[in-house]
Amino acid sequence: MEFRNCPVLSLAFGVCIGAAAALLLAGPSLVSGPQGAGPQNQRPGPPGTYRVRVRLIPVDAIVTDRRGRPVTDLEQEDFQLFENGRLQQIRHFVVQRRTTSAPVPAPVLPAPASQDQPPELAPQSARTFLIIMGRGRFQTPFRSVDALLKFVRNELLPQDRVAVFAYNRATAFSTDHERIAQVLERYKNLHEKIESRLAMRMSGLAAIYGSKEIPASFQAEIDKIFAWHAAADARQPTPGQLRDAATMAKDARTVTDQKLIPESNPSRNEFTKLEADAVTDLPFEEYAATYAATSQDVQNIFTCIAYMRHMEGEKRLLFFSPDGLFLPRLEQDESIASIANDARVAIDTFQTGGLQPRFSWSRTFAVSSLRNVSELTGGRAAIHQDVGKALTVVNEITQVEYLLGYYPQDEKWDGKYRRITLKVNRPGVEVSYRRGYYARETLLPYDREVFVAYSRISAAATYAGDLEDIPLRVETAEGTDPLGPPMIWVRVQVDASKIGFSAAGGIHIGKLYTAIFYADAKGKTFDYVWNTVDLKLPEDRYQRVMTSGITLNIPVPHQGPKQVLKTIIYDAGSGRVGSKLTKIR
Image (cartoon, rainbow, N blue to C red; front, top):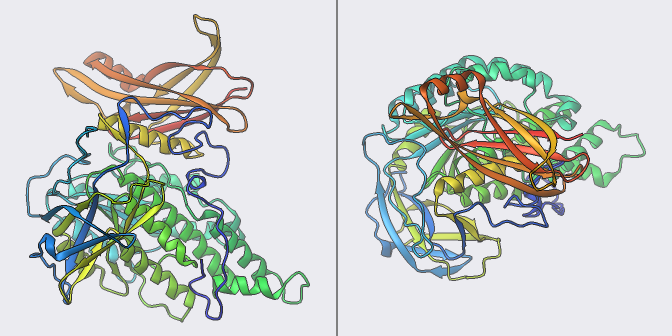
């Protein structure tokens, strides 16, 4: 591991975040691993799933010529595909040509699989875009939001699915492009005021040692962008986990200590000064603000990758940033890329701030991070370019893609990252493609809905805070069940206005998946209770619950004093998640 931007030296450091530790957040967590079970009770997943190792690995690829135009006449024989340097046999090959067609509902999830027949790779007629607005101002000086509005309104195919994420809110994926454009219009009008307030709040030592979460006092302004109280599709995705948080925090403390300690102070030493200089050449105040913004941006990128993970096919994340990602270590780019590749997410990056008024190698390498992340995920980077023209290029090259698939020859599924290399036997072309995946056992569903519910609930369980996508009120009372063991009765009040009901024959139909994880005061997970609630409400009762809410009474074993509960509700109709942490006194 090396610092990318030190002009005079490279310093190696250890990273203490492993694959399992990366799944946990600082502070008490009620899930000790990816399956959501405690160390003494490893459950395989919800009913209706099975574990699979051998599977067809999809590789999405775009091929362009020297002028950046799509190359559309290649055959399977023109490609060579390698995994960790070993040639693989291509078992699936199709050319995806996107043309105008009728919109389809979004998001679309893969069809259920069977144990004997792994899921086929089917061509996708629609593209999926998630626009993520990074921290900073975007209308001045280059009117980047206007260019994005033109892209959404005029360039997307009617069937394309698109969503917008900013700060800590998102829209649902939609083929109603004008609805998404209206969110961007509100963002254009409101974001500079929000950015000014955030810049004042997240500066100096507060930017280094303070929370990187959006303060509650800012939420009302952010919610106006998404019409939070009026729009049925506005939501709070489960926050992603910043994989390199410990390393980034260590670097920030090193810079802070050295830049704020006078040179005459005896506690200042040359080696730690070199460490700080290897991280940045920026003045402290500028570094602190940049560090805070990048921490938020990187966490939001992980959030958006998770938000898209279970949608079918390749997805494209369009990340906009005025100055880039300030990631001093080369492996931090690869960390983002590996998670994106595993989820089949290509990241297109757009640097919108123009040229810097003065040279800084820290700023230069912040821009290079955008290039690296895009290249490593099969995306495109637009640096110091006209944003409108760059979006047009993305639109054109993604209308024709190659979809390849192979069964890995390496049958040792150890959870490690495997690198994919794709070569084209034609001179003068450039290939953008998915660069890898994690070789781990996968839960495949007989019922895809249950699988997605379990995944979303597991993600919410690892998040230390509450999620208010579905507002919950939780009350508890001690009691016993008919057989005598002590129990805790959990009364959950669910805001029904956030539930995605469908209607059939005068009946309002919905389905909720509920999970209550219970742990001791130190966060050691005992187990969890999983339930499915089918809602079939006639009109009169539906109107009542819209006002009073949906009440659920769920018994949980009482394991002792100071027990901690985390209640999570996933709504299959809207894709929303709500959670609430409760401490039993």
